[in-house]
Length: 168
Image (tube, rainbow, N blue to C red; front, side):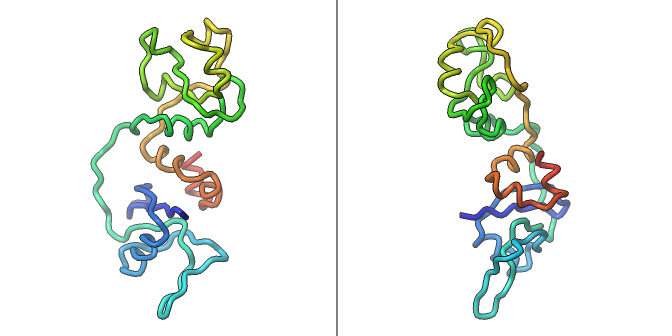
């Protein structure tokens, strides 16, 4: 299912919705299309509009302030683009930089994406103890970044240039 990015009236990312929900928001004048697919259109008896990729709400929606994105295994894999932090190959698991056996916990700064081989080889040791340096340092994404990163890579690459820079 094609996801459509929803921006607040202030152009800050809010969420992603299904194509059907995006069309309903546009048709009920609750949102406007900011970026559309160049070739695809939604057609009906009295409707003909481009398939929206990004819509912006017409009225500002107050969202409770969220300091940080909630941690999840899927979030770590998406943040690291499914690349192993130790060898760069495709990652399928999440590894704790400071192992749980040594007091490390589930947090953005203590977890990285890892391939199963490297996760098993590192075991319950730190990267220094295992002689396996990290290719990149883990970071904590903002809630907006986490939401944009959750979009499929193919859809992120099709975002307008001004919005894609915010997601990078």
